[in-house]
Length: 241
Image (cartoon, rainbow, N blue to C red; front, top):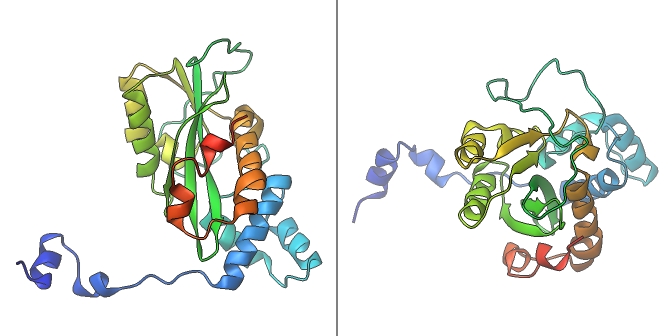
């Protein structure tokens, strides 16, 4: 058997990193994140200042900086048109929005994808879903405990192995602008479309899915574990639009 020291050496990992246990969010912060998520679903145009005000009106003493930090962890950003002066990942190519005035009349003409934050009793997860624009059917979904783009890529590759759309639409998140993700679509001969910066209505169908999913399933059932959350039929197959 290879010693632990040698295993760490082979994968270029320090011994201290092997034993390190990351700090988790406090119960108070998890509750705040749940409240912020509910506010965001109802009013996605609220920024950190107004969210802090809304929370204070419910008796939560929280300042704007804390709200900003929690929004970053959750992967949320206020929806409003912004000048394209900077990009989260400037080395990634941004594709134009190609669905304006396009009539979507058949299945597999357009697929769309998005990521949402999922509150849990003792933590949180992220959920990606890929939906058929015409039928509003959720073709595939995956959970992850980080916003690393691999779970998005895995979901896409699994679906492309069975079928493919003419066009694929996402927002400009770094998970979807990553070269490996866009190259997978291009190699499959799929046209790439991306929402305008800060324009939630460019991908409105999957935004509506998140609202239905959370109010009709997640907030009601309050899944206790990731195993329960991820079991077949637990989430999206039961909440189609």
